[in-house]
Image 1 (cartoon, rainbow, N blue to C red):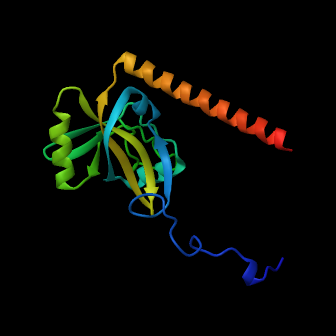
Image 2 (image 1 turned 180 degrees about the horizontal axis):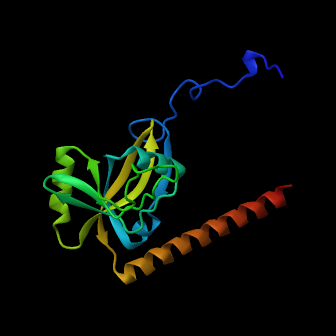
Length: 182
């Protein structure tokens, strides 16, 4: 069937970049570590590039990644992502990567120094929050975090539940008001 060229979809994303982040470009989130936001109080976040093998990138694009056990460690002035599970690429051959190998993070020297000094304080750690692609490049969002106590976790859950209940009450009141106006 012939389709006129004017009605065909345009190649290449349609003209401009969608702004979704500080540096521009559209974020395509591959994996998130929701447990980290529950277990830790996030102090500061950083965006880091990842040094990956080809099969790791292909496996990431399939979106079967887990960050739940992941952590970041500073060794010899370099940041390394440990225990992030990127499964082997199913169509890979002998060139496949190991699933839980440590991966180098690309950060500026000032950021590494800041993270290293803060992470040495008692109770602070560096955790990965998300893996995503921006303009075809794999990035990791990492955070300097402080571990929460059990009562802090309960307090956070209570606040979230109270906020949800108040939002529901407001929505119900608005629905009732609209129904009376009609």
